[in-house]
Length: 294
Image (tube, rainbow, N blue to C red):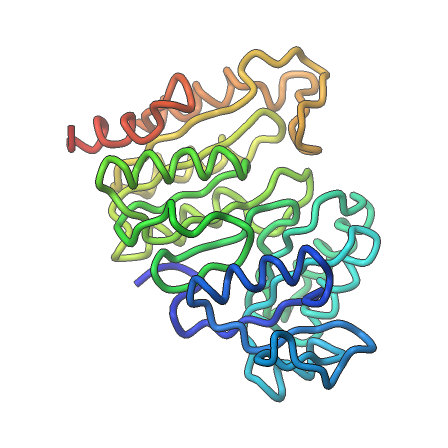
């Protein structure tokens, strides 16, 4: 078991013929992911690397190749249209790697995702993607740092995801699934969505949650975990030293008024009996100590 993706996931890459899309498609294929189709309007009929059929639309890839997940490597100005196209094609899982999508575009996407009858889940945008180690990698994360196991990881930060995963792997603990939910103010999948899925997944025995300043997603997830989850959970919050009102790196990492500060998040996590790592270098160790494994 895992969540959202496994060895049977059939992936279509939107933007497969661009520089970024083609590079990461090859990396995913080398890892063993089933890349069954690509999409670039106007290039339908060609074969990518003599293996993967390219279509003009996402719907064609669903009808002809049975794609059930879509990775989007499309420039920011056109990315929202690609997400909406994937929603229209009823792709169950859409992973948007693109950074810099205008917030107003994402507001339209979010509205569509929330409509009754929508069959799609969005991960991202501005995220590294999702991986179930040893089975399926959809995104830009380095495959070799992951190892199959029982720790579920969810993170707003790409680099800190890799840091936590590598620590766990080096300590001998693999991952069930690792999700980068992205750092933009409007995204598709929240910390709460992810921890609920990890809680329901029998393979996942422990959870790592990596957040950062801005918004209140970590507090909402912490409150739910406090009420509903018996699995050991550790967390790290980035941006503790950031001055109020300063935007730090991610578009969503901004503290305004009393909302979104690191201390508020850490307090909520500790109140929920979630172990909080003091620095990124001890995320794995913090979980294992809380779990009683070291």
